[in-house]
Image 1: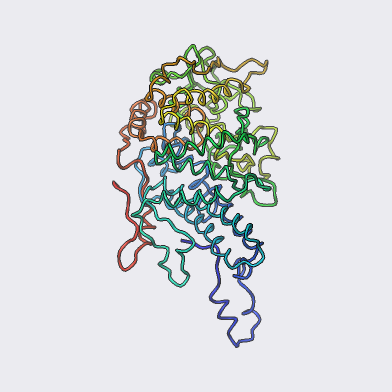
Image 2 (image 1 turned 180 degrees about the horizontal axis):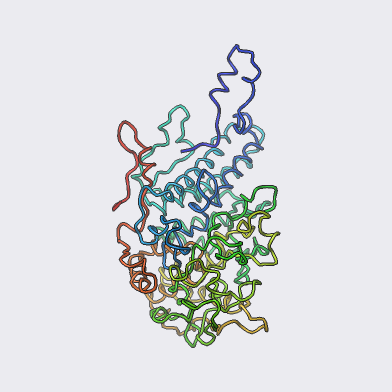
Length: 574
């Protein structure tokens, strides 16, 4: 595991040498001495270094392998999206989409390296703190809490990717023992992750003076999220209740969760900060989604690269019945009208009669519907290979044309300052609804889901130039006598369906299906249905007991050898 705190042995040798050449007294460029970091400013620099990896960029990985949006692993690997682009571009993602990931993939190594470099940077803070003299105990406790929050996050990412992974804390690394971090992955590390978030929750302030730093409520929400991944609903519920009862958060207009102009709004519990035109080369912008733009020079992003296209299945899921409620079992029977196979020069009118959830057109770009302030989405001209990857493009991370040059980087339009809302108040409400279903409070679950649906109904819809809605948007709350909240199984399905609609294309879907224990059922049904539209999915199968987790990178297993034996064990089926 890489360390960002490096004390050069060559420098130490130079200090005791009798040689007088001046170059031996010059510290290596880019290397911090122990004295430089064991003070208040040094600890803050180390902490910022740990925060800086939240976006998924750095640590030698390419930009999308560890993107905070998890669009490859949480999106393309689910029923939300196709890889997009064309068949020959980034073929590793096609293997992931078909549940045929391999241990030697660059994507696996990139995500692993990033996760554990994040752990290492967090541990650097914790290793330095005991030697710091110019911080108060309260300041040290807060720095410890922030570092442990971040360490919890990076381990959480690794845990849900690979399940059995090593937990590495600040006491593990021994600079005199190069094998000290070569730990086994034969233990469940959820208790360690819980302990990190619990410490953070107990010791972080309610608010921070600097945006982007973890707060008590961010740690509380993350701890609850950790419990949900273990089906510990009774443990998660009081934490989520506390966030709701705090009165510090509220739902905002739905689209305001996806605009740079409304970053860090009242719905944000924890979001990853992006910035552009800040004196850097664009590395502080959202580089993780750099491939996920329309394939046309006059479209947002400037013409690259056509990845991460919404599936027909996802678009169909936004259809509603005449009462404005989801169709559940029948939504995918017939495709919503689209422009598959329709030439750009041919006339096309989108469906304006089928009842639709208005969140669809803030989530997906489709022909005939306005695309922010870019005018009407033109269809095939924005798509790299429509026959391969379908007619839709993603929308939530896109920028307004009027923002180009201000919220986009001057040299790269795909690097933008639109933050990623990792945990928002809607997350808390729907997680709490899950808990209420599992403890038997079905009407409270209905109330929570209705808060989300009421917000969707009252948020401004996508409109045409004359101000009329762009489609027949019909969405309503579940009535008090709804049969869907009269029994636990039906209520559970309703909450899960709402979660999909609310967070579509945000990279959570695959991990939700796995933690709910329904991935094999949902994704195999999806593959059977979707293969009639996307031929490259023919023969793809989600294998229960294998496909829930990805293969450990083969290089990491090779590098884990101690005394002739690997300390890391590969996941089943790989």
